[in-house]
Length: 78
Image 1: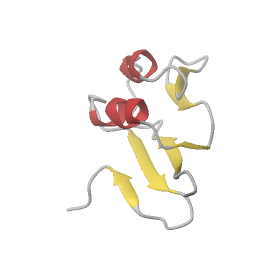
Image 2: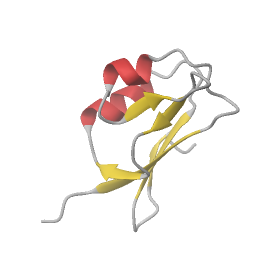
Image 3: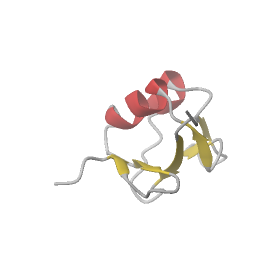
């Protein structure tokens, strides 16, 4: 069975640079020169750590969508 891939984005207008995502998922996120979060890769393997980082972002700046299907992983759709 093929591994699920995610497209991970960080909304720079929302990000406050708390760094929690980097601590929770250092392979998935890093802080840029402006001290805002950014995904290390535009597409990455699904990961509990990356999902945990998104779920715990204080301003919900992280979005995760399944590559190919476009299914929203986070934030949950109402």
